[in-house]
Length: 186
Image (cartoon, rainbow, N blue to C red; front, side, top):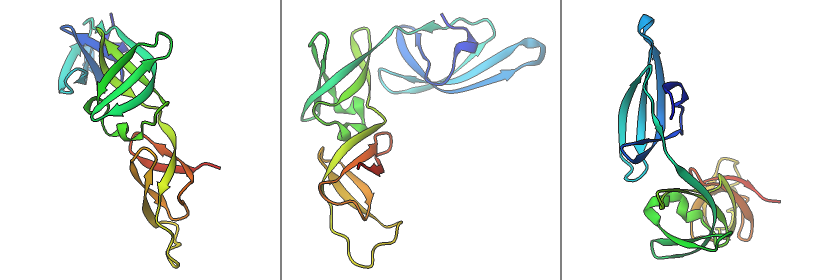
């Protein structure tokens, strides 16, 4: 059980048997009346967001969420297959649950899979991944200004904006949260 002071951003709680993640948190002091906490909660099963207010002595049920590091095996259409490396159990996850970062999944890479009551509720990729550039247009003479970007295709099929000096065959670091170029690997 959590008290209202334990609620912070990214805390996972349970309301009526459903897991919620705190996405916004604001505490207000109410003079002699104690404090209240206003939170916005994201339903981890259907993605809906609700506001909720908790008062001084309210108790909040913690959610029993299991985090497992799993290996990504392959994608088949919109279904992604992962394997637990200790038990060799495999599970299927729909692309919509992973979201846009699914384009940065490379076979053999690892991800953190969150499960609630035996059901996958979230797949978190590492923040930075190394991927090879498989197609990148050549630099045109005169386009060497440092702010000029071009589109490059990566080994996973993802397309990202990269600086002009990046060429086919380079390995780059990509931020999976927003799909942005971070750096070129040496």
